[in-house]
Length: 74
Image 1 (tube, rainbow, N blue to C red):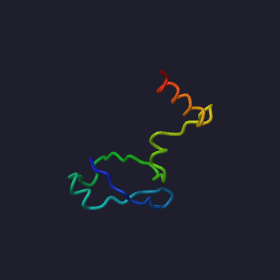
Image 2 (cartoon, rainbow, N blue to C red):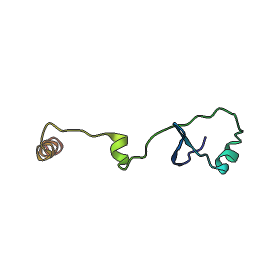
Image 3 (cartoon, rainbow, N blue to C red):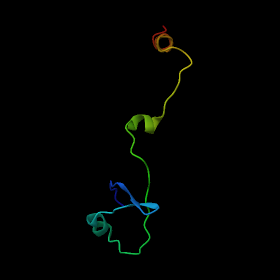
Image 4 (spheres, rainbow, N blue to C red):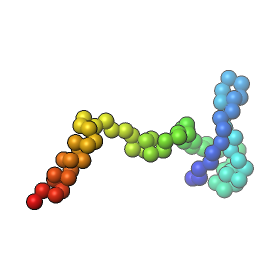
C-alpha cells in the first residue's frame, strides 16, 4: 500500500480522483481491480488533529504550582 496526494475532481454529478501511473505500476494494479481509498481532507494543524484539545478546569499557573509542590515537597 502506498500513499498518494491528488485532487478531487468533478465528473458529471460525482467526484473522482486521478491515480498517477507510477502509483498504478508500483502496486501492480490493473484496470477493473478493486482498490481501497482512504479518504480525508488535509488539515492545517496536524498536532491538534492527532491529539485533540483539552480544556483545563484550573488556570495554568495553578496547575504549575501544584506540580511544583508535588515534585519538590520535602
